[in-house]
Picture 1 (cartoon, rainbow, N blue to C red):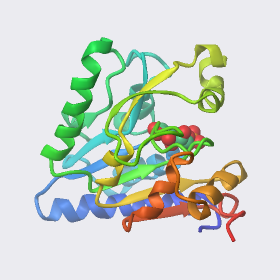
Picture 2: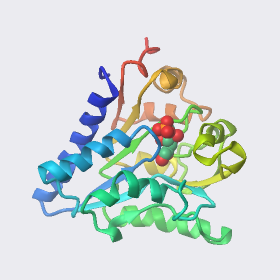
Picture 3: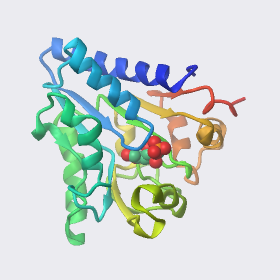
Picture 4: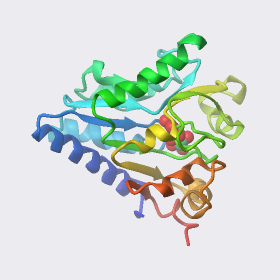
Length: 244
Ligand code: F6R
């Protein structure tokens, strides 16, 4: 638990930079699982600063994003492709071919094969060294909404009504928020060598309490993380304020 979001986000960025540099020293790629939304923005700001001011290079980094709305055009303002470009990729030296974000433009009958290929691609580069997560007010991680299975893989899912309400500002009304998304599964996330879940502000306090102290249940998918030895919750004081 950190005093502020700024301190916590810096800590996460330093963790990421350490992984990248350790891999660099060995001539290997760092494979990072990334998230979108408000929570990681300050982490990405710090990474951009480290690139600009401290020479942190991302040439040996391969990324896989957790999720994308479906359907979604990559050049749409609300796409996670646009989000990642704006907050991170446009400002660092990562190779474009090393960036992976689920494709929101696929025909429905192509999605299942695509999702399997996404999983295989992660495995083929050695698996995720680190997955960073936010948490939705439904308890979702990625877009694994209540009802998701602990061994779920990358797939097309239906977004919870609360998740669509929370996204409505970005889309100018809930009716414009896509009803579906492609997300890595809980099982995909679990395969990462290290998992960091971040949450800031009072708004997240009650779901953080459930995720950390509640009964493990598909009703709150983030509770599955209690089963992992490789997970760290990084919180600010407000998000941690309901923990006993
Ligand atoms: C985003 C994602 C979601 C968000 C969650 C929290 O890629 O997978 O699980 O992390 O909805 O969103 P924010 O950070 O906007 O509160």
